[in-house]
Length: 175
Image 1 (spheres, helix red, strand yellow):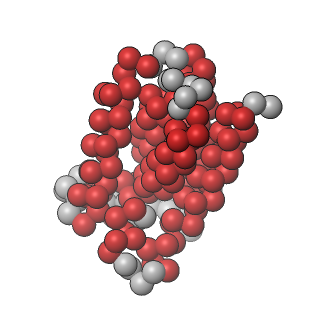
Image 2 (cartoon, rainbow, N blue to C red; image 1 turned 135 degrees about the horizontal axis):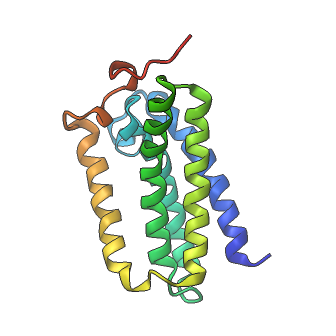
């Protein structure tokens, strides 16, 4: 197995484990406001997007440092992977809750799992195909904008459903 493929699989495991820990870290740290910038501070879908975004961004920086010379399209591919995986979380959540009419815990976990795996798979394939190299700057800027949005909206969210707890927006969990 080549090194990039191996490190992609390790990245999937890293993000799954780190994202799972991040889900509880804010409460475990006594609601530390700095920790809250990078981990969910409530049960909104927006805050849960951080579970993929920040761990994958961290791991992507490691991959970029390690492989940027050997894979010239790595940066653009990882940026698209981060963006795709992050936005796949609300897309899958709202799709399944619209179909089923309710939020189901095991499907929430599956949403995270699928989003992480697809984001890394896409990054890996696009790194090898080199289709996005000309979009590197644009994709990096979009990741930076999303980073800033996460920081800005953590404690000052807009009045939109994605920033609210799904329990309060009608996506109630059945007993």
